[in-house]
Amino acid sequence: MCNKIKIKIGVILLNRIKTEKYFENEENNSGLLKRENIDSKYKWDLTDIFSSDEQWETEFIELESRIIQLNKFVGTLNESSDKLLACLKFDENIGIVLDKLHLYAMLAKDIDLAYEKYQGMYDRLMILASKLSAASSFIKPEILKIPEIRLNTFINENKNLTVYRHLIDDLLRTKAHTLSSEQERIMANVSPALQVASSVFGLLTNADMKFPTIKDENGNDIEITHGRYGSAMYSLNREYRKRFYKNYYIPFEEHKNTLGALFSGNIKGDYFNSLTRNYSSSREAALDANNIPISVYDNLVNSVSDNLKPLHRWAGLKRKTLKLDSFHAYDAYVTLFPSVKKKYTYEEGKQIVLDSLNPLGEKYINDVKFAFNNRWIDVFETKSKRSGAYSSGTTFGVHPYVLLNWTDELNDIFTLTHEMGHNMHSYYTGESQPYPYANYSIFVAEVASTVNEALLLNYLIEKSESKEEKLSLIEKHINNIVTTFYRQTLFAKYEQIVHEMNQNGEALTPDILSKLYGELHLQFWGSEMTLDNEETYTWARVPHFYYNFYVYQYATSFAASETLAQKIKLEGNVAVEKYLSFLHAGSSDYPIEVLKRAGIDMTTSTPIIAITKKMNELLDLLESLI
Image 1 (cartoon, one colour):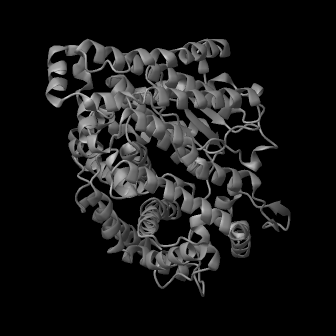
Image 2 (image 1 turned 90 degrees about the horizontal axis):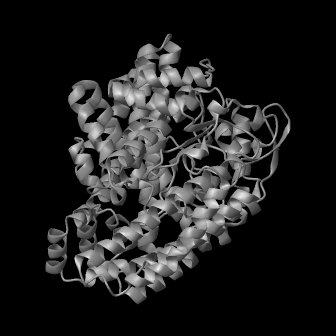
Image 3 (image 1 turned 180 degrees about the horizontal axis):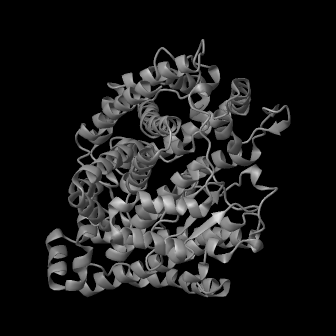
C-alpha cells in the first residue's frame, strides 16, 4: 500500500514514471563535453544511494524475495493491532527500498541513455514494482473490512499505529471506491494494459515519427525535432518560425487517426477505472485521490474563462509592437526586446539564485548551498545524457537530486532555482515526515518551484541595469503567466470537455478533437489571433493529456505560488514561517489544507483573479516603459 515510487518533478513533460522510455534530444550528439573531463563537483554522487551497482543488485534480489513473504499477512489484519502494524511496517520497508532502487537506476540511466545496462536495471525494477503492487493489493481492502470502531481501538491501544492515523482515515474516506481483495488484484494486473496508449504515444511521437528537413535561419538543412521546437518559436526570423511550425505539425496530421485512437483509448481507460471504482466521472476519480473538491477545478476554469481580456490585450500588444498584419501561434513567444542577451556561467547562476532566495532566511540559503557543494546536481550536457531538467523528488532516507543541462542562458538560472525549489520541498519533507507522509501531491508540487522563480524574477527586475533589461524581465513574467496559467487552463478546459463527451457516448474522432481545440484556442487568445489549421492538432502532441486531469495543477500551483511570493515580500518573516511550514508538511494532511495553513485558499477564486489582475498590472508597466 505504501510502496509507491515517487515521481520526479521537473520542466520536461515526459518525466513521469508512467512513461516507460525516455528519449534524448537529437541535439545531444555532437560538440559536447566529455563526461570524464568534467570536474566531479559538477556531477552526481550516486554513492549517497548505494555504494555500487553490486549493492543495488543485492538489494534488488532481497526485495524480490519479499513478494512471497507478503502472503503471510493475507487474512490476518483484523486479528490484532500488532498484526496490522506488522503488515504496515513490512509494506513500508518494501517501499523504502523500492524507492532507493528506483532513484539509483533512474539517475544512472539518465546520465547515459545509450548505455543499456542501466536501462535494463530500470526496466527490471519497474516490473518488480508492478509485482509488488499486485502482491500488496490486499492490504487496503482488508483494512476496510475491519469495523471502524475496531480500527480506532487498534490505534488507541497501539501507539505505534498512531502515525498511520491520517493514512487510515484517508482509506476510510475512499472506502466506497475500494474493491474487494480479488478485484483489487485484478485491477493491479490490468493496470499495465491500460497504460499501453500512453506508452505507444511516447514511442510514436519520440521514436517512430519522422519529421521533415527544412532550411534554418542561415539556409542550412536541419531536421525538425521536439528539442528544436522551442528555440525555433523564439527565433527573430518570422519566416523560419512559420516554416518550422507548419512542418513540425505535418507528422501529427499524417498520424491523426492513430493519435486520435490512442487519445480516445486513454480516455476510455480512465473512464473504465472511474466506473469500476464507483465514481461518477474520470475527473471526480482523479481529483478524489488527493481529496480535491471538484469546485476547485471548476473555479479555475470558470474564473480564467471569465477573465481572458488580459491575454487578449497581450496578443494585441504583441501584434502591434511586432508590426504584424496578422498574429499567429508561431508569433506568440518571440521576444519584443531582442537586444537584451546576457550569458551566465553556472557559478554566476548559483550566486544569483542564492541572492534571490535571501527572503527565505539563513537556514534555507545554507541548505541550498549544501546541495550546491555536495554533488546533488548534475550540471552539464554530455553525450546521451537525458535532456531538459528535473528534480528527483522525495526518496526516504536519501537527499533529492537535480538534473540540468546548463547552456549559459538566463533560462538556465530560472531552471536552477525552479528545481532547487522542488529539491528543498523534497528535502524538508523527507527530513520532517515519517515514510507514509514523506512525499507530496502534484497539486502542491509546483508551488515551491514557482515561488523560487517569482523571487528570482523580482530580484532581477530590482537589479536590472537598463530599461531594456527591465522590459525583457517584465515580458518574461508575462510569458510565465501565459504559458503556465492561461495555456494550462486552456488544456484543463479541453480535457474536461473531451472526457465529458466520452462519458456521454459521443465520438472522439480526430476532426472533432481538432475542431474543439481550435475553438478554445481562439476563445482564449481572442480576435487578435489568427487560427492556423496546424494549431488545431495540439491535442495530438501534448503528453500530459495521458495523465488524466493533471495539467490544471500547473495553473493552480502558479496562482498559489505568485500569491505566496507576494506575501513573503509584504509580510516578511510571518509569511516565511508559514511557507517553510508548508515545505515541511509533506502529505501529513490533504493538499488543500496544507496550502490553507500557508495562507492560500484554493477553494476561493481570490488567487486565480489575482493572477489576471497581475497580468494587467504588468501590461500597464510594460506599456509605460516602451
